[in-house]
Image (cartoon, rainbow, N blue to C red; front, side, top):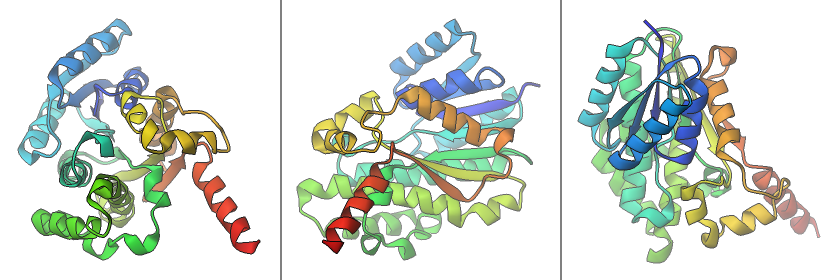
Length: 278
C-alpha cells in the first residue's frame, strides 16, 4: 500500500501547496473545515496528478479528527502529517483563535500519536509571532493542561489574554496559541520518540496567502518592509520546507522549531539591542 500523508488546512495556501509536493510520492488525505474550497483544492491537485482524498474536518472536534485518521489509515500507513490548519487574529475572537490553534493541534497530534507507526513524522505550523512575544507573557507552566483539562487550559489562556485591552486579545491569543504549538513540539518529542515518531514545528513569517494578507493592515505589512528579506514569503517556499521536515531526509530532526521568517525576528532583535546600547 502507498504511504499516506495527511494535510490539515488543505484548502489554504500553504496546505494546498504542501500537498502538491508530498503528493509526488504519497497518497494525500486533504482535510479542511471549508467543504467547498476543499473540493476545489482536491480537483486542482488531481489536475497535477496528485491522488488526494478530501475529508471535511474541524480540528477542534476530537471525534472528527479521529475519523480523519481512520480514513487515512484505511488508505495505507500514515507516513506524515503536515498540520497547517489554523486561524489568524482577524478571523475570530480570542477563544476561537486559541481553541482552533492550540486545542486543534492537540487533537491532530494525539490522533497521530495513537495511530502512526515507526518512522512517521508530524510537522505543526507555528508562527514568528510566538518568537516575538516576550517570554514573561507566555504562561508555559499552564500549557500541559491542554492535554488533560482543555477547559482549564482555555480559561487560563483567557486570563492571560485579558492583560491587554479587548481589541488586542485576538492578537495575543494568536501569539500564545502559536507559542503553545512550539512548546508542544519540544515538550512531547521524547514521548513521540518512544514510539519511533518525529515531531517538529515550523514558524513562518508573513506568507503571501489569503490568511496572511488578512493581517497585512494589522502590522504584518510593516514587518515585511523591515525584514532582512524585504518581501512576503510564498506558499511554495513554505511547502518545500514543510515537506522536507516530514520526509525521511530529515530523519535526525525532531523536538525543535524552525523559524522561516525572512529574517524578521533577527532584524527586530538586533535593532532592539543596538537601541539599548545607544
